[in-house]
Image 1 (cartoon, rainbow, N blue to C red):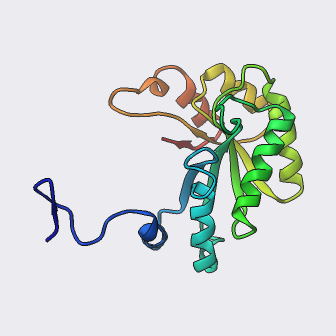
Image 2 (image 1 turned 60 degrees about the vertical axis):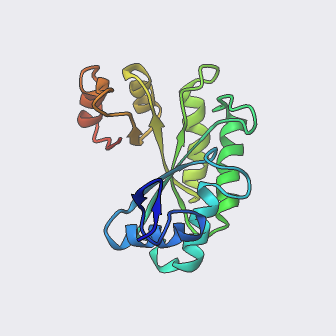
Length: 188
């Protein structure tokens, strides 16, 4: 057995060359909700390039997987941008990088952009939903007021929220209850 720093690590590491195998094992074992972000990684290797590599190898799995990608962040500055132009840029970039291998099921603004009303973001994403390029929109790390705004603006397909031993706010701040009342799954 291979050892590093006195720990047995096995013969196979987890890296780029093995990522497609890991994703295949995930699909084969029923892990069909995949979450990534436009800003995870660099231009050459990121959430979308990995997903594209997977579905080029296993196109038969594309219909099985629900792909959620966070965006709405300016590349390079990481400034929030869920304006109409920022939303279009983000969704177009994600779709381009996926290269037609997989439909983007859910686009999620990474955080609430305080400069853009949420209904503008939803209205812009709706253009892609109507065009068949996007399945729906989600929200990430939002409070109750923003969740309620999203519900008024359109259908919220999923809420990505933090839940851990150290952060259990959604169980007490009304967000979890509002998600349950409105049939919004929580991705934690």
